[in-house]
Image 1 (cartoon, each protein chain N blue to C red):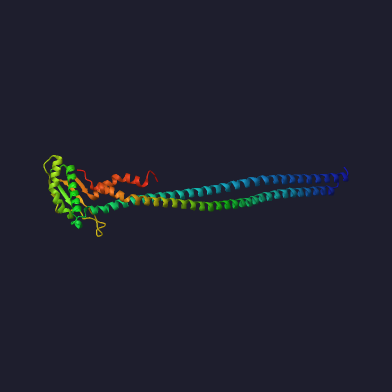
Image 2 (cartoon, rainbow over the protein chains, first blue to last red):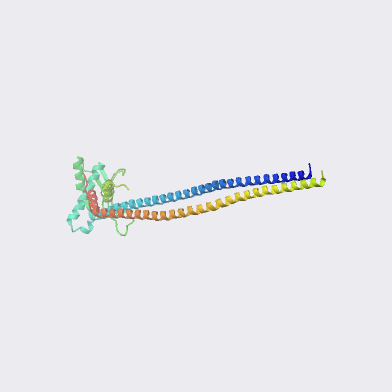
Length: 239
Length: 110
């Protein structure tokens, strides 16, 4: 081998080394670009998905909050209507309760014998009704102090009427002169117990009580007629 | 063989090999940079996308606020109308009901 051949061979080897390197570099470059695009697409898609899910969650929360808020508003609205319903019914009962005073305001209407007799007869009927229910030969009676003279006035006729209706001997009616039912409501005792009129009868042993005050009767009538009243006011609508 | 000439040839080959390593090494560095660039571009696009989604979200909140306010207002109006009707009904039948109650209170069955 001469020098020229050696030199040529070395040159070829150098050329080969460079070519190999450039091919490898090119390969790396091409795969880098592919990798770049794939990586980018994957990452972009993953990030977008994450962001989209995040905002979908936030939007769902907005919807939920909106529904909760509306539900609370709706509930408050219903309660408000129900409260208004209760208020009007209570006001009716209160109005009726105030009217009870007119039934028994005999003191100030002594000169109006019609009203006077009306309440007196009412007391007699209340007493008779209690006697019929108690069916006792001897009973205790309590009334308002203001009503005492009226009660004493109708005591005998009540006993007699009961005796005739029940076909028994006239009962003994003991009027309690120590303890009275509270007086009617007024501005002074607006928070105290009160009695608008009527009587309370009890068996001698006190175990059976017939409460026939006007207020107690109003409570019973009111409770009994409440469905009818509500129907008149609210129809069939259920809030 | 001339010893000098042999060493010169080896030297050339070594240099060529070094240059080859350099070329490949450069390519690898470029690849690394490119991948990092991919991440940077991804972050930029993600930020743009997030910004877009945030705008949509804020718009939704505004609409919902208006819508919610509208719903609440309608609900309040309906409620007030119901209560108004209730009071009208009450005033119509109130004295009638009171009379009915008093009638039963004072009508004693004996």
